[in-house]
Image 1 (tube, protein in one colour):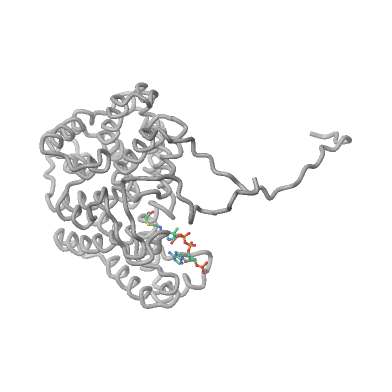
Image 2 (spheres, rainbow, N blue to C red):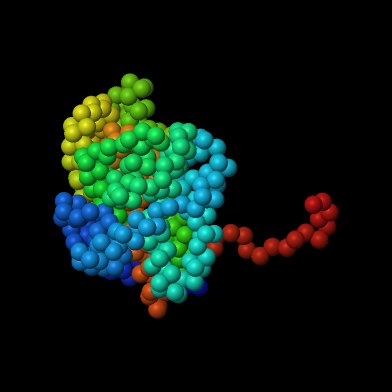
Length: 393
Ligand code: CMC
């Protein structure tokens, strides 16, 4: 109709009301359910943050223990689904493996088809929190040709995940507390970010009353792209190219400014933050800590710090208010932890899962929720007629 306004990329249009996450992009503020990200990163745990995002309040000790115990009880993957991994090539990108295996989960849990049964919804959220880290670790093991391990439910959430990734069958594995703490903190920083592309995707798919596995699988697919979660992988590829080409940071930044071949400074810029991303500040602290704790010296960190300095002092980036975002330093930490580059976005997906679930659930519980159905402005051909003398087809 004549009332339709164009807002390409949804720069100004709110798609929903929400109580979950607050962002003030001008001042670099991020809060989950009212709690500042800095306080949660310093004092909470990833599972507690997951509970907070989904249920709206911090759990009591008993609520926390029940939640963690339920997640532990659901970590096993059906043996048939494990064979599904055999059908995929070894070189498969773990993000594709993850989205397809999460989609496949719905075939085992048909109670997920009734999105109006609150007990079934809750159970399937627990199943996703329990199983996605395991599927992610299997995607990793698959990519390096190693045997899948069973979850060890005597371990905490993150410890279990690290063992599934780095433990080797028939060998003992000691989880490093430094590594576990650092990964838990990074997962907290990724846990939600209001209506970003993947979360909006999850809400849109959910708005059709499709099951929660289908919705989360779609979210993983949206996260895969290099402008969104895929940026953490793209940053490392960029740093490697700068190092290997020997062109130097200044020359690379010049190419970005000239928009040569559409090259961007990956890990910089954000739709909402027009000041330093508060998560990037916390990630940068972690990068220094983790690398020195693990005794890793990585020239990539120096290149990244030099890039940041050059960009922050350059008019192109100043005028456009482009600052490092959450993805700028995470890859360097994941690399130091031993994850292959192609696992980086998978780690983002594990972190973002509680946010996806909280948003899917918030929309699902809203009696005013409607199917998401954007309008368009049609600019194609006006009516024309199929030629009467048209003879070939
Ligand atoms: N390097 C160079 N120029 C940039 C960059 C960048 N990283 N980001 C934005 N610009 C320029 C852009 O070319 C445009 O300039 P001009 O007005 O001359 O055409 C201006 O800044 C505004 O950019 P935009 O593309 O209109 O901004 P947007 O809000 O649509 O895009 C973004 C946001 C995150 C997609 C973009 O900044 C970007 O591509 N960054 C690199 C990828 C990245 O790091 N993504 C991770 C985002 S954070 C968390 C996550 O979702 O993973």
